[in-house]
Length: 374
Image 1 (tube, rainbow, N blue to C red):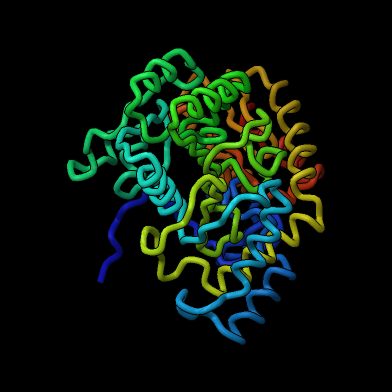
Image 2 (cartoon, rainbow, N blue to C red):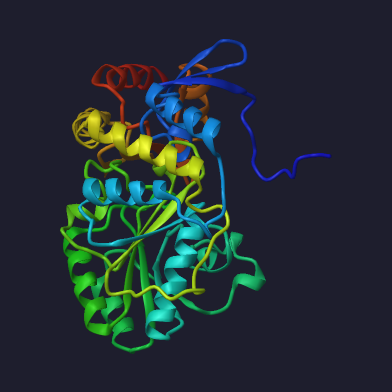
């Protein structure tokens, strides 16, 4: 059986990782400034993380959600305290798309409405409604194109208010920082006014923090730079440091009803062990503060390069936009300088390193980056 060919692949087989470094099957070492799409939060193969998962799988890897799993409450307790949302409720599932699906479903149950506002260049997932609120017609199949969504320009509060005033908007979904869209940062004033407008219209504000959350922006959630508290927050990627897991943080105004939401694998014992390890390491090693400090240094250094049209981002979520396509630049970084990076569209290099990136490793990247710009 062949694999279904959905991604163009680099001819590199990564077999080992440690911290912010990975190795291929030829023994070549790479500096990882991408963390597997922002998934690696506490670093590759962190010893405490490895120990927690190993001990748990030796004890019990999985059992049904029809019985008590005290590890789920441990995740909720730690996440609530570290994020500042200990008054919210937590629903655990498996992926970012699934988190957004459930958030929007719960929003519709709440107010009985069907229309969703999303934003230009948004990416929220590849399933059913999650892909419909993603602003990319190439990946929206006819069966997903159901007319639920209105796309608006990011940071245009008047456009958002005009749609909300129609009284039929179920939810507004927005990324804390747009990732696939090119590291576009919503303005603080815009988020504040959007939050207020949603409240007045009884529309549910969903903050997609799947890529921008879990400390990546230098705060636990990127929207916390604006000082708002959305109705729901979706998380995935960094929550399990590579173990598939996701969650929805849900405001107390939503009351759970048996049967409305459910999951087979969500919040399983092994996933919870991974999530607990991540939160323990984030707290113990001050990784949110590290992301803020090292990210500010990287942003400052990158803004000195005249070859870069614009540098955007917060913390360790950084985009570098160029006038010309970046495909060859990224290829040279990978094959000549042994540095993994990502891209957004045609002209943006995307940096999403593990949150444990050190100042020395940041400077090492700057040095290697400089060589490919000559």
